[in-house]
Image (cartoon, rainbow, N blue to C red; front, side, top):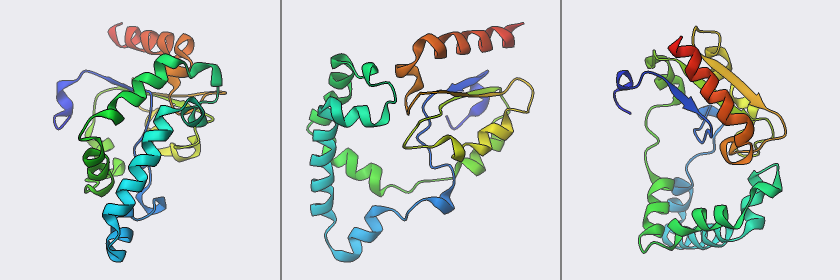
Length: 174
């Protein structure tokens, strides 16, 4: 939120942020706009995304434990892609100003933070989490990488994630 002081603590279980801007590619929008192909590119990407989120094989690419990709999960992820404005939202996400970087925002948060990261995350590899790992040295903060786990540790390993979060919250109360 814009007001970090409104939360007593936070737990991050699925990092989608661009950890290091210098290592991120330029926005696809800028590349495509230069070619005048943006509407074609977004339509193509939307349909790829639509089919990707509809298939368990596509979703399972970010999950280390393939058994975690259930029909319920596929339906839950696929549902938003069926909304009439889904393509516009997808294009807006790709073309939006990314705003301040995590390097700028994280120091503004004074509340305790627990970060749980899948060690086998193919989208945001644990090697890119140094900023969060360094923050774990501060009182009340923690960083835990979960072995044999992909991009969504809360979905893949709830039997590990839930007790970690509950124990961390209990430690803050004590």
